[in-house]
Image (cartoon, rainbow, N blue to C red):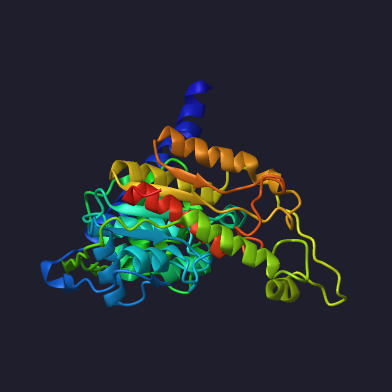
Length: 406
């Protein structure tokens, strides 16, 4: 009886498993090895002198912007700031204020929806240049509530040259390529088109998930990415040939941050006439009032960091920053607790962020406040974006940390 079960049931099952395993390995191997042919003649070289020594790029959407971004990362006298919608044109924003006062070299990168996965990809693209780089990351609590990067933002910020460079750089640890590939696989149906490098990274992820992928997933992947074609795809190499520029800051420039900040705070509060939420009048009228003239109310939704996509991206970013021995720091932006009455619901998240940074000996400036008693009115101009007073507090921190001035 047992012999018959083994012959008629168990043996076919084993054969099917072996067939699936061998077929999967052959297909994925064909994608990653045989279907990708990097030829020296296909190398794209972007060359020039560094010209952007301050200010901000909202996005890196041309070769010149890419060149200056890579130069900023490589130039160890320059600080690169990574953020999103808190960046503005205010003269008090760090990439405007410190260059104007101290001739400092500071470049900001990002605008709305520029979140941690996009930032990680930008850093990975600068892998040959980023050892020991000076970098500052602005962490917005809204990123974690949004449950990670969306597909449109990925396409906007994960530029083809960057993905191609990541694919071709064998010195980048595989876990980072797997992490990007997992996102591409997760969002695959949302992309209007998928590039060769995106398919490659997706394949790297699927290869790492061999024991978990189903026959249906494998069949869908084969049909989507091969369609019977046998030609080799070419993922060009990308090289940046840079001529760095170094400015000489004036000696012993001391800025009275506390005095300037105090004045800015008083001016901000004095100019508020329409509300008790400590947000500027224009924002309050446009976004926080309903049609009937009553005030909007909004509560923050609790998140589970064990499944939160943005938090997983954060942990990967910290890993990479440590591996590359970057001079990195983190700025944690608050929510306005006068508007978000349950801002304390994010305190466990903030504790996890700061605990991770502390265990990795990474400096940070935590401005998050769980209630109105611990919030400093004027730090934000609205419910989640820095005002001029907030930027002056940030400027003082960055000046002290990177230039040794209090």
